[in-house]
Length: 531
Image 1 (cartoon, rainbow, N blue to C red):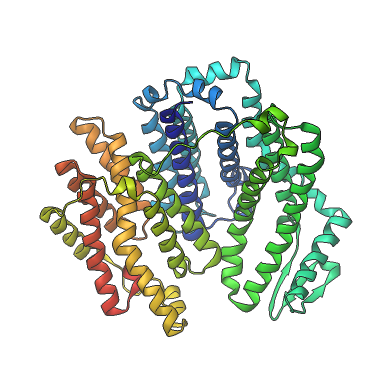
Image 2 (image 1 turned 30 degrees about the vertical axis):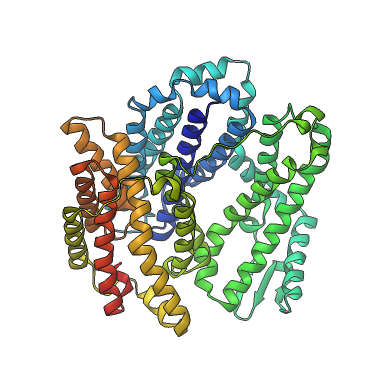
């Protein structure tokens, strides 16, 4: 696979991962719906499962890129031409439809309005998936792959898509006595290891510390994790079957992965109890409980791959002796600099939602991740045409004033209360991180992605197509901000600034000035909700 082909494929996969993270975070933070009260229980459960299914398939796709670069190169041949067709537009339209119910809903509880939102969700999912697949490679290439000698690739992707179903089918395993009692005992042992004596009701599998209690039921038992890691391990074995020793792999890696998954789940429950008892019940229930499972599974999958690749005993002699291919140097790639820092931004947002309530309390974590991402791609960023355009700065100042004028009064009381409870040094550190992130880092990362990549990618020339590209990129930008109207106007202004001279750096300058105006007022007032 050539560097251009592999880089393009990896960046598109990273883009799709960022979109999934944004969807998960947005609907987790700003919406809720109860499938039992929706009137369409099966459809609701199906939609809830789509996120896990998409993550599983993306993971298998990354393994595929790694395992069979030559086959993937043949699949992606002609992908650049596919990118000039309607597929990016179809994918973008699908993403907008997925966010549309959240953007227009007067109520954030979708239980009663589920039927109205179901159409955009289903149509958006179909368009986003189809557009994404055919953006990666044209339809003829996918059809050729299905007919070719590498049918196992199709089997691996299908298996990955079915992993969530396997996890659901495996749920009754929780009723097995040894697994149930073993998990319960492990959680109790961990708490005692941390010098905490829990209050337990073994018959009902209830564990509590102080006034915070949890019941280890089927939904949080870890059986789903066991099914997920089994599916991941099988997909890995299929894709690398030419290089690994299958009997050794099956006898050692799968049992070790299952044991690690079980242990991580026990650790997750113990940490959940301690967070709920000693830090915040809201953080435990609304943040950590929702995200920690996927975070732990991702760490386990990455650790599994690293361990297998670093163990020659598991590989055939020819594969173990082969020198690893040199990784392409992405740091100086301007396309990677536009996409990957934004992916890191989205993932940091998910992590902040897992460990902080409200999520903005974890803004220093996002600022650190953004700073590292910008530093990593600085060789590409510094080569961009940097200059301060007075017109761009003036446009940014106008956006800042408009944002303040449209900011709702008394917003985010939970954040204000959480900040008021911080000691002085912690509050000062949070404020510095918020200002640096808001004024310097976020404008750079967001403009490189929304204007430098999304807008530039969709702009095919002509007034109508350019207006549509501005509309799509602006709508995507607005969905990530709580103030929909103000963010939409800001996105349109930043797009106009970029298109005026064709420099994304002008949009960055305008965004920096706008955020500096808002950040300065927030600092003077002590009202961080306006940012």
